[in-house]
Amino acid sequence: MENETWIKLYRKLLHSPIFENEKALKVWIWCLIKATHVEREQVVGRQTVHLNKGEFIFGRKKASEELKIKEKTLYDYMKLLESLHMIGIKSNNKFSVVSIEKWEDYQGHEIKSDNKGTTDEQQMNTNKNVKNIYLYLLNKYERENKDNFNEYIKIV
Image 1 (cartoon, rainbow, N blue to C red):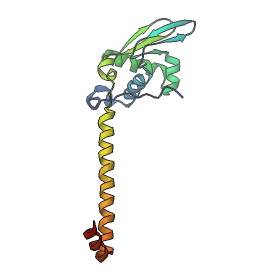
Image 2: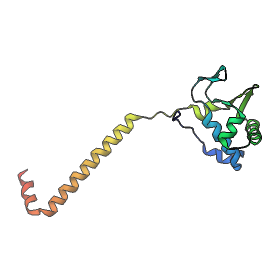
Image 3: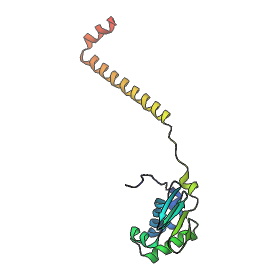
């Protein structure tokens, strides 16, 4: 199983030129998913390639198989994304390094959860639920045993 991380998709994607074209959208989302979210080294053939956040190794043949799109069509869509300044492509004779433009703006800011606030809220909700159950049972007991309950209250 590959690293289980996620990507962000912003609603403004609805107004992007690629949203109107399902193949272009498919290729764009594939690029976002392929891009590394941490700096790392990747071995390609006999060489090691350093990848920054938002970059990935691209080979037309393998990508074509993964996406089930003809190589030429895929190449055209990659060039379209490049012309829209969504990706950058640095090629050599073996492979390309694709970089997502503005990666840090769109994907880089991690959402930090405030566990303290969440824990406090959960505790308050639990306390309210316990109190509500207690009051419900007390009221139920009062209805069912009205005479005994009134005597009990006088004693307490």
